[in-house]
Image: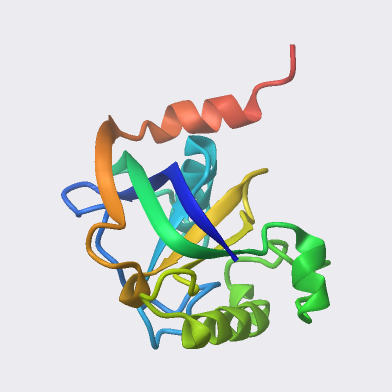
Length: 180
């Protein structure tokens, strides 16, 4: 456990506050507590949202607009599980991490949700207690910071820059370019 202070990245639907937490029932929350998903790199944040927008749909939803935000985060206690081997020791099948199709993604979520729920349960807003997890990003080579909003406090996350609307066509082009 260690204190954490850094800039992180988040992509949200245009008009939504990037600092708003939710209990959506995703990879690192089982839907019973509020979290804020962020990435340590802008590419990681964009890659995660791109995966979710593109997957499970016959056509990419081009009319929806998403914005990229840079946030400043300061947490008293973060549990660093950013190495896959750390997660393997906790029982997560790392061979499947981020590999399942969008429709089957929940097949790999139960163990990561268990890990996160346990960390959230032992956490609190007390200095040094868990208020977030550093975990691998399933779509990009970087870590994600999952903030436990019930423990982080209102001053823990601040938007410092709105980088504007994400150009998904440019993102696709950059991902399909052959190396120089």
